[in-house]
Image (cartoon, rainbow, N blue to C red):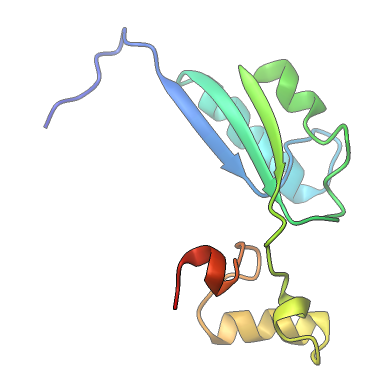
Length: 119
């Protein structure tokens, strides 16, 4: 197995569902700590993906990431299905429980079958 020499520049793509922020909630702070850790290993590009209307997705969501990363891009996935959209008759918490019961993560994007290429 070949390893990358230590002197070789490393480019890292950090894809996150939560914007890295020092003064944000725990998830944002965790994302910022992860970004800082990745910066020790090489040059980092940040891709923040979110559902339309996500409460964390403000115009300045990546303000701190832009100061640290080579590039920081915010991308709204218009076909992202939130738990309450997949099971609209359930409450938000019940929809999250359904994701857990089906062995999937309620935070992961769920795209419609047409977008995924399912028949």
